[in-house]
Length: 185
Image (cartoon, rainbow, N blue to C red):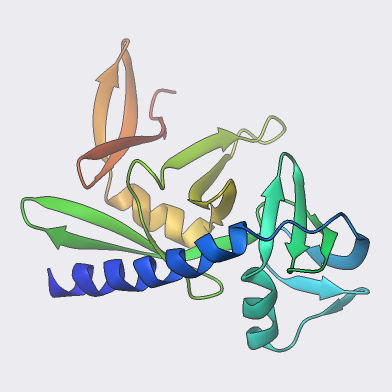
């Protein structure tokens, strides 16, 4: 449990910082040529950011409003392009939390998130390929795409349940159950 408590302390410190930034409310300032690709890489004027520290800095002021994403400072609000989700959850781990388990994701910028009712998993299916597109909610409407390898690891932690005559893979984290998809053919 000490590992889980440490992660909870990290998350609480991060959420305190984010809460202060939510009060920033500058007027819309325009667009900036920054794009976050579906793989989580950030680009400026077509060139990939090379410094992780710069990505982390910009990520700290990222805000979502409806379907748009903005970089928001006390003085400016600049729209950017996000192809899918702005982050990728590329690591997953299972921790014991007393009599329960906790599922913890780590994103491509090092943010850790514990899956629960405030940070749920949702899975969409691509209409063209019928492949799953799993996401975990981070904060304020911002999600991370669960990377392919992390999703396979998550599926290994899943159990099969029957609902309405269909079989589903589900995972449980801190007492909350999330469906990953059906196992019916």
